[in-house]
Length: 415
Image 1: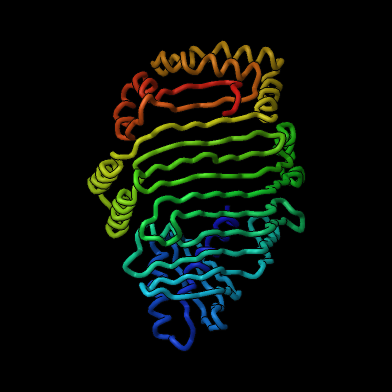
Image 2: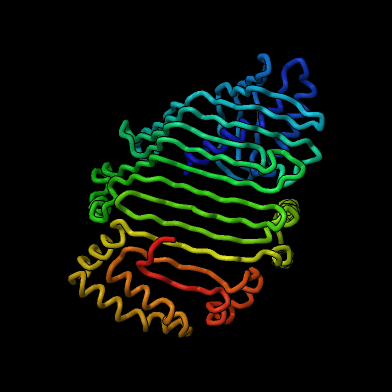
C-alpha cells in the first residue's frame, strides 16, 4: 500500500511540475508553481518543487517534496531529476507535455520496529499526454483529464535481501471523446492493468511458524495474479459503467465487481466538490453541522440511480481449502462440517426477521458449500432505482430486496 501511494505521489508530482517553464521566466514560473500547488492541494497533495531548467522543449526539474494534506507522516522527498518532454503553453494559459519520465528508483529503508531492511526498486516510470488546466478552468472534469496514460515497469520489494512482493508492469490509460481537454467532452473510457503480481510469504515460517502453517494449508504461501479494470463515463447523463474490476489470482480465486449507474454528471461532481471545500474550510464541525452537510450531500445525490451491479467470486481453491481447514479444526470430516453449516443457515438468517432473505440466500449458499465453484450477488432492478429511494427502502428489507431485484446465484456460468 505504501509503495502504491508513493508511485501515485510521484506521478501527480510529475504532472504538477509541467508548470516550471524555465529560469528565464522565474517570476512567472513561481506564480505558476504556486497555482499548481494549489490545484493539487484539491486532490490532497502538498508539493514543493526544486529548481527547473529548460532544455529545448523539455523541462528538467531537480527534485520535489510531496506530502499528503492532513497526514502526520513525514513528507516524501525525491532527490531525482524529473524530465518533461514536448512542453507547450496554450493561449488559455493551460500547459501540455507529451510525456514525463522519472529515473529508476532503487532504495532501502530500515524498519527498526521489525529489525529488517526493506528494499524497493521501480523502473520505467512515466506518464503520457499531460494536461494542466488554466487557472479559471479547474473544474472536476478538467482535473480528470490531467493524464492520458501512466505506467511503470517492474516493481520489487525485498526484505533482508529476499523478494517478498513484485509486479511485472502497471498501466493506466484513458481515451477521451472527442479528445482530451475538449470543451465538448462527451465520454471517457479507462483501462487499468497491474500484471504479474507475486507475493511470497514463505519467510513467515521463520518469524511466525503457526501463522505460516495456516497460510500454507490455505495455499497462500505464494500467490500470483493480476488486477484489471475497465470502465467508461458518459458526461451527458452521468452514466458510469464498470465492465470489470477483477482481482484474479492463480490457484486461489477471482473476485469481480461490475456496476452501472446514471446521474454522475459534471454538475453533481461540482456540487460534491463545493461541499467538500465547505467541510474543509469549516474545520472541526459540530454534530449539527455534520448532519447538515450529510443532508446536503444526500440532496445532491438524489439524481444518482443504480441500473445494475454484481459481485462474483470464482473459486480456484481458496473456498475449498477454507472448508477443509475449518473442518479439520473442528475435528469433523468436511462432509459433516458442511452439513452442519447448511443445517444452521435457516435459523441464522431467520434471526434477521426477513424471511425473504432466507429464501434468497439459503439455496445458493447451500449449493456453494456442497460444490464451491462460484457465487454471485446481483442487483438488477426492473428500472433504475435512486440511491435515496434505496436508503428509504432500507427500513423495509423485504421491500428493498424486491426493489433492487436482488438475487444470489451459485455455480452459474459467467456472463
